[in-house]
Image 1 (spheres, rainbow, N blue to C red):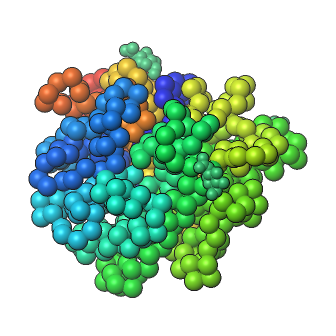
Image 2 (image 1 turned 180 degrees about the horizontal axis):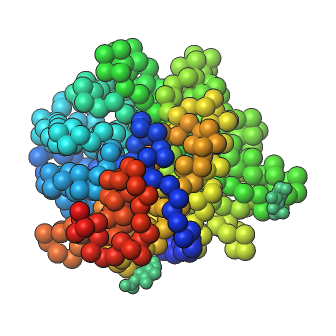
Length: 507
Ligand SMILES: *[C@@H]1O[C@H](CO)[C@@H](O)[C@H](O)[C@H]1NC(C)=O
Ligand SMILES: *[C@@H]1O[C@H](CO)[C@@H](O)[C@H](O)[C@H]1NC(C)=O
Ligand SMILES: *[C@@H]1O[C@H](CO)[C@@H](O)[C@H](O)[C@H]1NC(C)=O
């Protein structure tokens, strides 16, 4: 999703080391390298073959994107998936992650299945399997069927648990013979904050003074916590269903995804060190701790108080132990210092009782992404190691990490540097004993971005959105990745040797 990533971000070049110093062969055989896309951001064909609108269609058509764009056509993956799977193969990807559009599969949110939707995902999965690509499925990348939002306010209502579980059941039943890696929900923390606190993503609810724009409906102090609570219950319910009904035969795993930032203390004062831990408890622990230990972190309970839903004994038992892995979307680090807990009305950011910024020297930011963020590969290593240490050594999949440019240049040397340094940092974590199992670049190609529409580009492949044919072109990063993954033994060359002619010309 690349949510909460800077709208206009310019990552500083990382000054690549003169020698890469590692190869694909340094990673275990069962570690997977891949890339990701998501349904609304990639597929287009929003009104085709029986798909009903999701909350993203409603939001974009109300003109709520900064560039007034929408995903009506996006990268037209619905029609181009076959060619795109060929690109997946060209790039030597070992795995591919996509998300399923709930409203394409079950247009009324529950009940009748849309045969055309089923056919599309079956075809896509078959195509990947035929090419020997491991399939990773995200069941929900923030695109709730609008009908469920209209009927009962979606994630704010516990009724969502039953509907999500039935949707997940259908996915397991129809696709589980070929899919072993399931993630229930994407960026649960950011979904709750972005949708219900700052109102930056659909359904765009908030209350003054917390929204990114004037708020008309919502309650920023309580709704994010209610939504996240229902997401946790929904995840747990779907996972328990999988374990009871499918896992023995299908032998797959089910995890959840969180948006992550690695926090460094701004100073070594006790107050800043405590604020940094509080930041981890709010951003990571809020979602992961209930699923591992059965309850919210103490720091979250203390500062949110009665606005935080509590787990009944039965719910606590139901959510505890329902993670086979933790999926993370990770882009950058922040620097954290303590601030006094605000009196009066608070939202998530104020509840943390900390200020944070993208670099040591920046002024503090609110919940919106900072505008300039140095890439910090080390933060990824520290984060993975922390997750292992804090939450029982569960496997971690890096499900999104990547680099945005505004100009969309094909010669994306900054993205190549970003990938090298983050892959290296992942290897360092592995060598330190971390249980990290996969690395997926965001994004496989340029797509409709949830925060910036078509104003920023994350793709390994460039998509020319000005051209109706939406042609794809390999960027330098696609060629670099392809070369890295092709060559398991031989140390790969530096990118200055891998010129624009690229690896393909040299094979
Ligand atoms: C939000 O909900 C809380 C708790 O129910 C309430 O005290 C507060 O007034 C509500 N705020 C708004 C803006 O409705
Ligand atoms: C805090 O202490 C650590 C460990 O001693 C040190 O590496 C780091 O540079 C210090 N940070 C600051 C901001 O002084
Ligand atoms: C595109 O932007 C990057 C920074 O993101 C810059 O380094 C590069 O020179 C730009 N390329 C072109 C062709 O403008």
